Image (tube, rainbow, N blue to C red; front, side, top):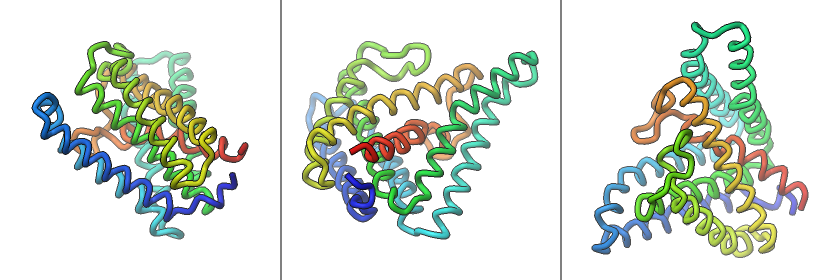
Length: 255
């Protein structure tokens, strides 16, 4: 598959359609007596998700030169949040500790952020970058919903206490179903390519989330400097996307 065949418009429609499906599912969950007590409190989270979707679509919808401007602001904000959190460990650290901290920040979010900006600036990649966002948000949203409704066992108690095994399984299952349906029908991918993309997203989503959480936990904070209620900082929102977007573009280049 060529990255040029996946247009921004098609990817944007897919993102908005999945947001609509999420609204319907949450609405059904809010009406059923069994799930209503847990589903109804998720509406404010869903509203925040709508803001995140709008923020992801806007730079690509505006195009150049605004895309470069907004990507630059995005990178500056990520750098600010990272330095604010990692900087808490700097004063008391030894020389070796400071070198280790610098390498830690360079590994994440430094390198993924650089790759993300490079990939997102290429016009032919806009559709794939948005599809990676769609798949990451699908995974995270269903993992959150599954965790709220059925979660019992923490998956990563130290790094990400709110993630549960049941939630991750629900997220992975719905991600696979979404990719299997939307890939061939909407994007034009083969079933194998769609499921490969889903598997890659599942791995990178967890990796990005844990990498972001590790930096916070090591500095003794719960969230990066807040930009949205209930979501934390911009890096809290995009940690998985930073890794998933370049990875999906790379994978698509192999097809």
